[in-house]
Amino acid sequence: MKLTEEQIVQNWKALLRKIDTNFEGERKAKLTNLYERFSDSMMLAPASGIEHFHNCFAGGYVDHVLRVMDCAEQLYDLWSSMGADVSNYSKEELMFCALNHDLGKVGDNENQYYVPNPSEWHRKNQGKIYDPNPNIQHMTVPHRSIWLLSNYGITFSQNEMIGILTHDGVYDSANDSYLKPWGKEKALWNNLPIILHHADHMASRIEYENWKNKDKVKKAFGNNPKPYTKKPKLSTDSNSAQDMFKDLFGDK
Image 1 (cartoon, rainbow, N blue to C red):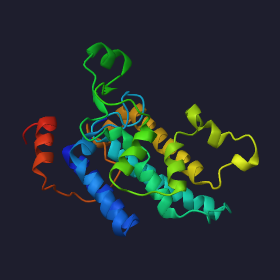
Image 2 (cartoon, helix red, strand yellow):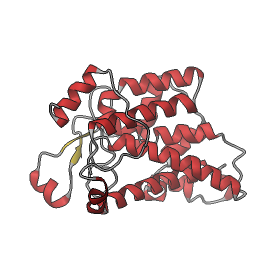
Image 3 (cartoon, rainbow, N blue to C red):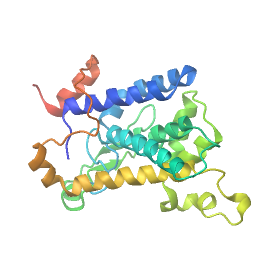
Image 4 (tube, rainbow, N blue to C red):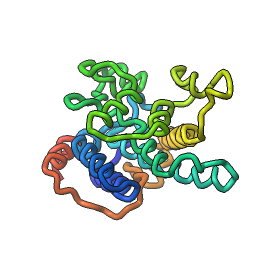
């Protein structure tokens, strides 16, 4: 899978619109500041490091976040329509979690989280396209997400913190105390973390299937599959982004 320069820019602009439409006031301003601070690296970041995982390609991170946000919003509406109690948290809280659930994958202020794997053998035979950056402090992705939000002065609710920390569901044993409680007094107070995990799982599965069926996608759309968002072409006025695109895609 590979996205073109145009597709990467489309997705980035779509993500900024998501921030603009789902949040307001000081929190929107601080989120915008954070995302613009990491724009150069975030636009080109993969969502995972292994080819058969989800969106292991340049631009995969933003594409994944957009899909998780839309899955979360639609699942919220579905749960509500089926009688689930969604009265004890807001849709904004769910969208905040979906937006920032994998934020830790952008790295820290100095280093990217993923770096190209230098081993041709591992890339070719095991699909390990990217490695975690050895120059970055070890931290789980959810904890780095919380750290980045805090570091940029972005406040979050208890619901949002638990949602981000547990978004990997039962795949991460660290979530057992939240998702496998002994006693009803320890059970989750609402279904936000469940909907978020389902949205992430759903998006990741769709992305895996896109990778698995990449030959079919190529036949339908050519060598460059359609990006997730279907917004019209948008240009970028960022010189630094243009320089990166030139390095990645070459001169036009």
